[in-house]
Image (cartoon, rainbow, N blue to C red; front, side, top):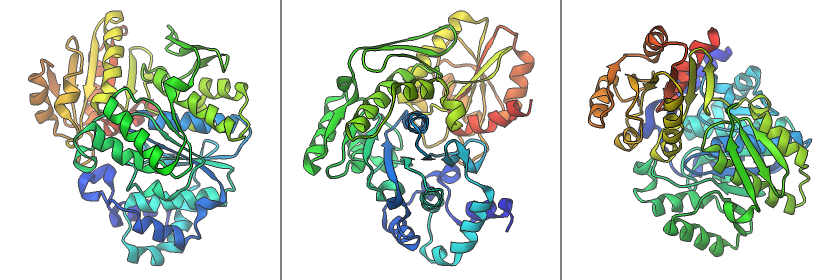
Length: 433
């Protein structure tokens, strides 16, 4: 098979959550363990860091990978979903997995894994773990796909577990309370393995983590309580400028307001890794924060796609993420001529919760991503009008982008988001230009 034929096989032969949602969700670790045994338990060949949480786990994973990379280690990085290219999911020192490896992997193991009927995520997780072994990495940073306890990635025994935060998302799978979701996320806490919690302001959530860590005798660190004095400000260059007591002063390339919390989580994680004897120089931290996009290929986190007019995209897709995005967009609205919003939302999200956080003073272009999970644009427009958000609807992201660029003045600000998949549809339109 060619690479394109192999991808088509993966998408058509295995359930893909990215496209189908609930129909592709397959909880449980039996298949993942069977696949892992089939390949000789590749994750045991290197050290791993496991990163879960509701929001921020992607940025946190990329930053940790960049820090280890700049510290001189060879680092694998497994994240999901991808935006433009399937190979974004599996990287070594920022380089995407070889197309030839994807083809060879499927051809070599197809007859053996097909009887197991793996999901797309189970199969790609196994591919990632095997690729990292074959690439002889020192570390692999593994991002949880969904939840934690029953996630395919939860077969690993890491040197560190990280849980960024908890908010209401994927409630049909993880529970409809913060405590229930925290219980699922806490499933990545392993016996004797240190765990860093990024945010635990909610008392019930905090108690879930404390109790789980106590139960398995895992050292627990609450990130904001683990870091000495740190001050961050978002500069006019759309980058964070950090002053810290323990790590010196440095600049964060990722400009979203949520990144201030992610930074504290990452620095607390670095402290724990150092405590375990892993050498991480301050200079590596500074370089990683300043160049994480180049080092790891991170995309879609308050990313500028165009300058005149300024177009920014962000993959925030639930109320927890939009609490930060709403603050930032309100600040942009005060600076620009007109705030224009290209918005699409998946039908399995807290649609009203997200719409309630969107700025009122904006011109909206409602749309839908090219996945079956997308809420139809016309229906989204109706739902949005009940929240005082007005605009027209467009059948595709490309049509919405074309329209907004025709209507916008150079000093307008255009935001694209509401769904990871809207961002995924939008990015190639600007990359081509």
